[in-house]
Length: 385
Image (cartoon, rainbow, N blue to C red; front, side):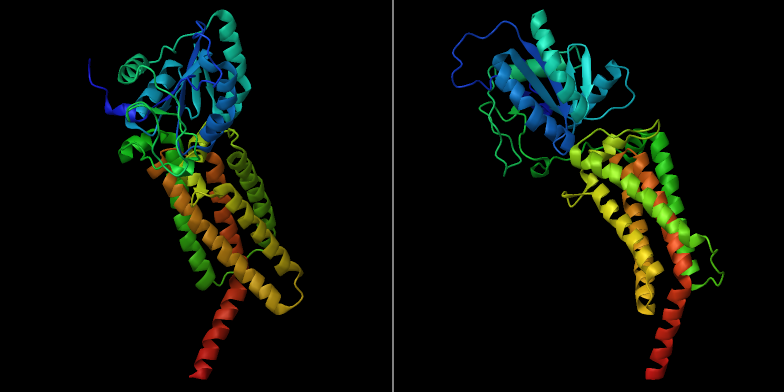
């Protein structure tokens, strides 16, 4: 018997041997088997694992068996790519569930369709493990290591899994993704960039554009004497409103776990399911953007309606500072997409471009106030000396 590969550290058994305490009947012959590709850091996967699957296991008992494959493990990621190729997909995200010859993707499609498919296959007499490349070897090796693995939930405080089986086989995690510390597959920079070449190229172009815009902003703020066009000030509320729409949609996706509607370029869901979709693992980036655009719009209104000079001055200066901080943070997030995550979100690029245009508009329109304040400050220092 060949040795169990190190990959089994990332393979998770979700056997329907989550047996109810009163189950004393013989094992049913009709069994439905399915495979779930998941990531422990993915909030969409967490919703499926903790909300969709437990009621099904409770309902069907031993008639439903599942194996979960962690794509953050190197071999699990390879099997996931092979599964995508089998279904003719050039890209895909997790959670990704396969039952029979059908695949379901996302925390919206799986809860909607998987229960009905289980019923359908049970009525047909059951269905065996999906015919996915490499899956049979994984299951055979896992069963050889533990012929009758049992499901035991892992403690929330621990990233390890608890099972009566050897440590190479473990049950699907039920704790929150933030409690897990599993490293990303080691991919080279070129391999990571090659996962989404068109989208990542757009991200790099956007990144370069934002860096150039920062330099232009510095020039406008401290060296330019050109008067801003009269209409430029009104672009700020328009851009801020568009930013509210974009960040509002991203907030909805991140908070509810809904699949993002992505265009033909990029992989929004891969970005939204990455650990970088939440600041400090807690605050969704979309919500942070929503708050930022709201404050920019509010400061613009204060500067417009403020009757007293200090109110207008401070609202304008704070608006400039906030847009500059927004661009700096957008540069950081845009850098992560091609060089760390390996995928690009078109919605995120749109927000980054809007924030950059906002910064240029805010700095140019606020330049006279900034330069007057700077001149007053230098004059006071001169007089004090």
